[in-house]
Length: 57
Image (cartoon, rainbow, N blue to C red; front, side, top):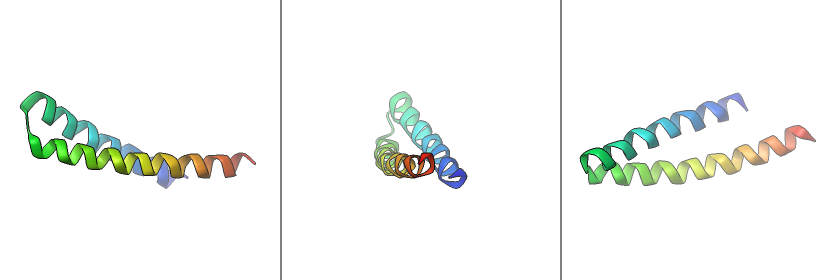
């Protein structure tokens, strides 16, 4: 579970950096990277929910 949380944190940091680059500098490639990171975050969050529910049983 700790590894999953660290993966979520790393993916969020990548998303935040790329989203800022797109918004502030108009970097279109950073926008694509931010969207990819958002999809990965969604997958990781679903996995976290699954693991968390199992751990609480």
